[in-house]
Amino acid sequence: MKKNKKTVYSSELAREHLLSRISIDPNICFGKPCIRGHRIWVSLILGFLAGGMTKDELLEEYPQLEPADIDACILYGVEMKRVHRQGKQND
Image (cartoon, rainbow, N blue to C red; front, side):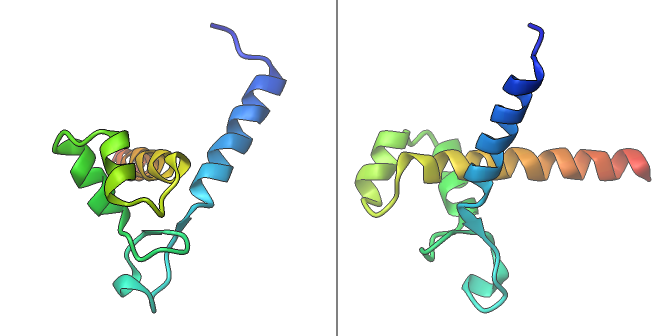
């Protein structure tokens, strides 16, 4: 599927918007990536998802979260994997 510039720009904005939901602050949760405004680690959410929990179950367990927060955690995990792979290719 061929993407035009507008589609690429829109998907880049959506990506940035989601990633802005993740914060890393050395003074909060030992500097681990968290969902902005909450002390919920990205790795915790990813672990629950990897263990078979659904988004709906997570939202029921953590009612303060929004669906986009979970999407942001998934995207963050994907981005970290991509960066890690690129780093290994540059070695």
